[in-house]
Structures are given as C-alpha cells and as structure tokens.
Image: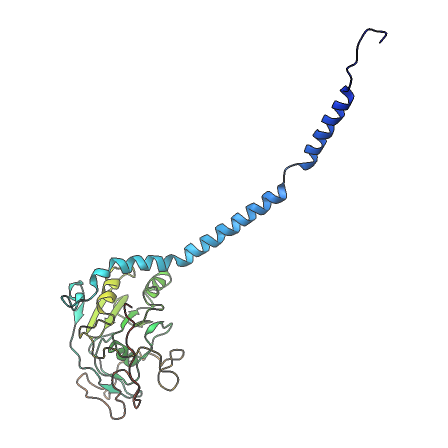
Length: 284
C-alpha cells in the first residue's frame, strides 16, 4: 500500500467468526429451567423421605422397645417372667365363669384382671378402642391370653396415647381402651396379673406384654382361644357395649359366682356355638 503498511490476509474473516462464536455462547446462557426442575425433584424427594421418617418413627421406636424387652419372653425354665417386673400384682381366678350381657360383676380390682365375665369376649386382635368398653367383655378377652392396656383419659392424652397405641395396633392378643376413674394414669391387665404405671414410656409396659401375652405356660385359662371379633348381636367392635362407671348394685354377681344359665361358652367360642378356637399366631 502507498503508506507502506501491509494488511494481513484473512483478518476480517477471523474476527467475524470469533464474534459469531461469542454470540452463540451468549445465546445458550444458563439452563435455569433444568436447574429449577432438578431442585423441585430433590425437594419433593426430601419431603417424601421426611414424611416417611416421621410416620414410621413410632413403629421404629416400638421395635427397639420390643427388642429391649425380649429377655422377658416366657420359657420352660422361666414360665412367668412377669414375676421379675417391679409393681406386678397377681391373683388366682377360676376361668370359664360366664354371665349374661344384662348382668354385672362386683369385681375385686379396678380395672379387673380376672373373675366372672360376659359370655362374649371383646375383640382383642390389636384393637384400640376410642371409648371405654363394658368391663365384663374386656375381662373375657384376658381369659384368652390378651394384654389389656387401660388408661385414665384425663391424665393420658395426645402423644402419650399414641405411644401406648404403638404397643397395640395390629398386634394379636392386645387391646387398649380408656378407663374413666382409673386411680393411676395407666394400668396393664392380663389374666391374674396387673401393673399400674404413671408414664407411657415406662419400659415395664413392654416387659409385661413380652412376659404375658399368649404365655403358654398356664398363666391364663383358655390357651388357643380366639381373639377375633364376634360381630353384631354378640360383640361388635365398631359399636361395643359401653362402660358403666356406676358402682355395681346389690344384684351384681360376686367373685365367687359359678355362672349364669345360658351364658356359658367353652374354649373361646360364642355361647351356643360349636366352632373350634383359633390358635395364637406363632411368634406374635
């Protein structure tokens, strides 16, 4: 050129190419939509895990309590481990002494844990009754190897009720109900055994259940008897006979009563039936 400078060939072309490259990069930008989607998925997954952990906490905690109480399971060499549990009281009662649904018993303890009882047993297949149930039906279930958790509804509420319920729900030969007027916050019953406690987190609850629920060593009269619901007209768990808080009258049956005519049922069958009792589930 006239001024003596020399222009390098291809320079404008390279500049244009570089500019186009920068333009493409700028157009791609940050994938905010993808990032937002991933964040949403992670948040939802975290919510599901948190919900599961919260919901399953009572079951997981109860499993730990059951494992801690496993040493109280009965054996041939230790037929009644409940004798080692502080606070347990015992009494001897004759089994298979039945009364009519219209009759009451003058029990020697409150709640009772043995003695004459209604010919129809209360369903005791892992059921938590929201309202108090007629005592005479509940006692019959004890005769079948059940553990009954009773609680004072004025003293045990909210999380304490949930903690007790975790010991019962879905577990054969257990049942739970409020018991108005109970002299302690909590009372556990099995046939011929009782333990009264102040708190729902007391480990003796689990020890009592491990030692006495369907204990096969003669601690309750009717081994192998059913705990299933009998149904309407007998004992309907959806509409059970209500608890009577009044003191039994002079016509109440004494603890020495021998049974009412027409009310007898044998080995866990309903009065007048001939069905065979079902065996407790192995290992339950």
